[in-house]
Image (cartoon, one colour):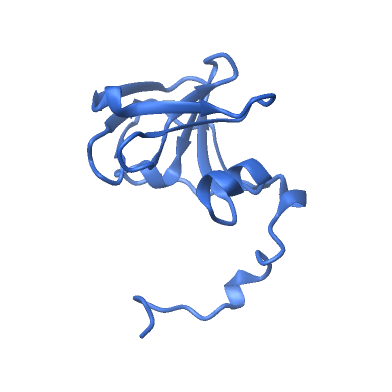
Length: 134
C-alpha cells in the first residue's frame, strides 16, 4: 500500500493518503476550469484509499455547487484545493498539485474535452521559459 502526503499552499492543512489511486484525469469541464482558474483540473481518483488530515482539519471547508454533484474542498486560509469525498463518500478525489510526494503515474487522459477552453489547443507549441520571462 502506498502512502502519499500533501498540504495546502500556506501549510496550515496537511494530509496523508493511504492506498493506491485508480485513475488520474485532466478534467476540462466548465466547473473544474472555474475551480482552478486554468485550462483543467488534474485529479487523482481512488475508491479504496483512506484520507487522514494530519493537521489543520478545522481549516478545511467544502463547497458543493447547487444542483450538481460538483464538490471542491479547500483551505479556508489560502484557498488551495484539497482532497474530498464524492459520490456519497465512495470516491476520493485528490488534486494532484496538492501532493507533496511523487504521484507515480501519468494522466490517463483528458475528460470533458468538449468543454475545453478555446485557448487550450496545441499548447505544446507555446514557448517555454525556465522562470518568469523578463
